Length: 311
Ligand code: 13P
Ligand code: SF4
Image (tube, rainbow, N blue to C red; front, top):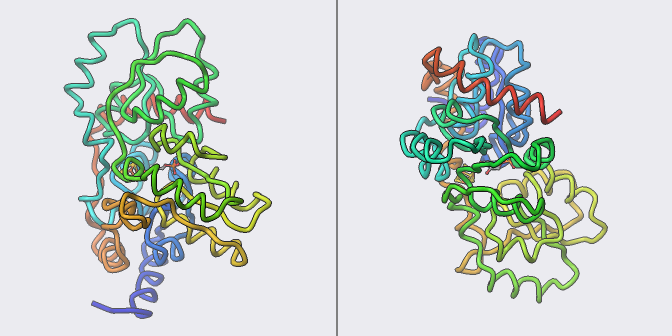
């Protein structure tokens, strides 16, 4: 196998040869973000996957994202560099249990975070991402009862912001759950003028200290426009790569975990993808996402509703 610059040259050669597009999420390793044709948040990546005219989508992200690409672009070959790249939110919500939960609440619609399996998408009415959730929720009539899953922190945040009760599935993101309020307060005391930007997957004791709450793209926009010179970033720290590229003169500090640094908040699933695995995925067109057609069509309905309502 090639190494270093040869590896990048080989990936570029294969990308052309395969007519492949490389999509990457902001939580990917910097070298993968830099190689990608497009880097974005979950909604932007879904849109790109739906629109692309490439023959192959190499998805540098986690499995539910690559599955979303396949649901929306079934004729493309979708490869994920490491098939073990899952998500704690998806794991928290087995389809059988979610189906039983829905049956216990037949008068509720299921508004479901995109961080879930294809099966759970197929059991849902409308999918949301962190960047589209508020726009979509505001279009649902006030008397409509709602189940929100699987992220109870995003659900709780929406519930508080819209003053609207929702039945919450008890899932969490292990990355955002790991931020420490005590360490964040210490960091704020050291940088009293630095605002805090947080992802809504953070628990309320972190959100309470945030000056801005939004999706990864929202946080990146905030980083590009806030007036100061230092920003505390309460989300997966690989996004800081894009901030440092866009604003090299400013300082971005990852919010700390209980050990006082931000490395414990690296997403272990996202980190499974590497340059080497991207190279072999493009070379072998494996590991490949495959979804049974009737399941895909069911899941597509709730995703299409999101794409319609989000725009
Ligand atoms: P967004 O990029 O849509 O904000 O999602 C964050 C996330 O945790 C993805 O796993
Ligand atoms: Fe899942 Fe959290 Fe990792 Fe995103 S950061 S993939 S929500 S575990």
